[in-house]
Length: 419
Image 1 (cartoon, rainbow, N blue to C red):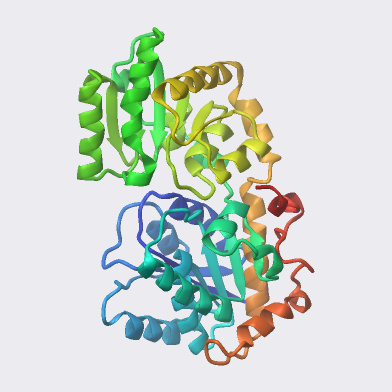
Image 2: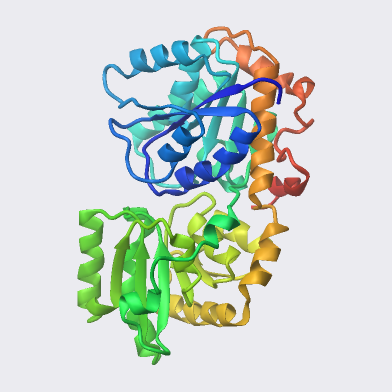
């Protein structure tokens, strides 16, 4: 890339979530290619997680701008001061509002990035809000990305393949990070005896993650004669944590459910697991499934499009119905633990490095989008004028493949046909 490309990345909040982790892993590669990333969080504080630190280390700036009455003024002021080549927003349909503001300021590249499936029930107010945001997004986005085909189908539009701005950009994982050793011996840390199964679950404490299913699954394993521990890794929440503890006490397994909170050595802990359980009912392309599979650890997950997508490309995923009884989860856990015992970490790593989930594939796609924005000035009209749509229609002249629904790299071609 000739010259520096300035990108303003907008996220809802900073945490140890998948969006923040994947973005942090990409930044060193983007920086090496001449991309300077600045960060906006829609919260009044810079929370935990690695992203803020990585942005600062690579020369970017961090700007907490909470969603209050002053938000629009502050955001526009920041755009005029930084003059980014690209605004890249990870805020679902609310991205439409932010990209409309970016268009007003003449930002050339305006990227909306869908990370989840958004298949939850919507009341009338929510449907109206989503309709307005989507109209803004369609009018002003130059690129519309999804971490999986289902994230575009459910969160953006079932007809996304007809929109040349859309493409699937799979989350890439940094295997070097996952291979770093843990600070603790996991079995010793939780007091697991030889022969007892260690089940790990990684994810933040929120209702859709359904962490409270772990104790009933342990109880179902016990009924099969399998003694097991559940280890929950990720940022906690008082209400959600209490629900997990109540479920553990009700099952008589309080001493076998361990809430470790956020950790920066997740890969090292995952590599010590016998099995990973991911009961979440709402995902895009779940890192809580992709990470253990990359390490050769058998993983049990609910039947979601993003989970099926991973299973189509890599072995080691056992899928159960979203509403399955604990007994069904327990049966799948035993099968997944058997897979772990038969799979070496080196074999899994080699397989992952050749897959569409390799981090270099994701980095190449991001760089292609950013280069196009910085190399071809965009002359904006007001939101809704069609200028953004016209730029998208002419995208093939800016180096975009003829069908923008396909990933921009050889490794990812055809991915959109799955799911």
